Image (cartoon, rainbow, N blue to C red; front, side):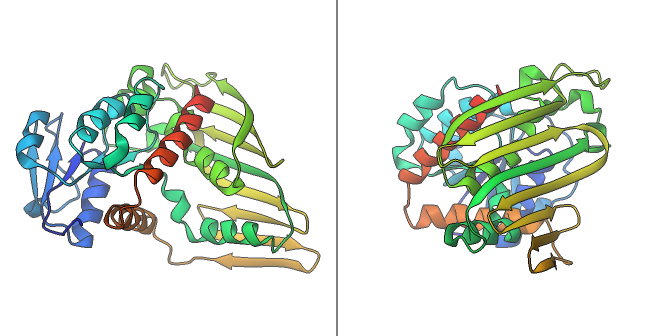
Length: 318
């Protein structure tokens, strides 16, 4: 059982690390330790309940119960192995890694720890309800799915040069496929089936001056017959993000940026909105779920499942 006073570790204090720190503070965790590789000032969190350190070996003194890995993708597996060998439960920011190296070892030693990958779209009310509707076939069988996510990488963190970010560097595990792999995980999860095969095309035709793909198109076939397609890019200056699900008796479109879901059927069109939706809610629900899985001792089965799902995503993105 993890208590609010137990030491919790956050590795990395970039924008996503600060978001996790803020969520932990909001939920009442009072003993937060932050591992930092760069000594930049923290921008948006209350510093009163956190302590920072720069030598990973200090973990053996701190003895954290759980850790949030928010470092560049290329460091995830090495840090996950280091922590898992010490029995520390892990929530690892997506993607799990940019390579399959070390993944089987991580799975092998995960018997006494819960390992979860931070694909927080699974906690979005639209997608949670959609998953339930698919299971009971309220609109008939799901036949096909599409997702589209386009943003402009230089706009993500205006306070820094985008070319120095992990997303822009191959050696740090960047590229749009892995960086925006939320949508690949979402399609795989919504399908309720194993991936049968896939085809990935990468686009390097932009002028951002980076050594990774800025666009990708991925087509996936599932064992249950459903097909899916995901387009991802971070070269599109006007953000667009939508999802489409085609059923036997209806089709559903989700505009993520507007928080709107539209159902089209022979009965007409039905529009649903989430006017007060805050994306932080997804991170909060994800964190609550993470600690619940630990406290209810649902590992190692959950850990192995999560690692296998990420193994497929990494393979699709390579």
